[in-house]
Image (cartoon, one colour):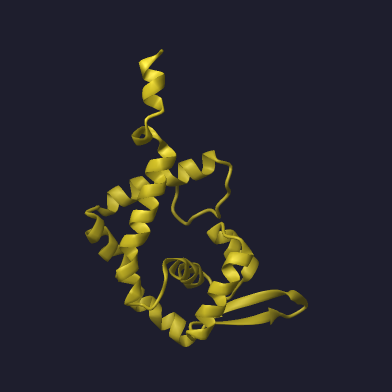
Length: 155
C-alpha cells in the first residue's frame, strides 16, 4: 500500500473538512458581534449586499450571495419586520420584488463598519492575511465553477 495515498485519506488532510470547520468556526465567531446589530450572519450578508447597492431585486441579491431565492425570502421578511428594508413589486414586472434599505437600514451601516475590524482582532488576523485568505477562497469558488459577481477589488 502507498503510504502517501493512505495519508491523503486522513481527515486532517481533507480540504472539505478544514473548510467546513473553518466556516462554522468563523460564522460562530461573528455571532456575538452581529448580535449587537440584532442581525444573524445570513442577514448581515444581505445587508452588506444592500449597502453596496439599494434597491436591488431579490434575484439580484440571490445571485450576489450565491443563495437560493427560497432561502433568501424568509430573511428578507425578517429584515422588513425589523424595519431595515422594504419589499415592493417592480413596476412593469409583477413577478419581481425590489428590496430597498429604509433609513434605519442605512443608519445601521455606520455601526456595522466596526464588524470587519472587530473580526480581524477576534481571529488574530491582519488585513493582509484576510485579503490572502479571501483571494484563496475566491480561487476555490471559481475552481468549482460557481460564479460570483465580480468585485470592485482586482483579483
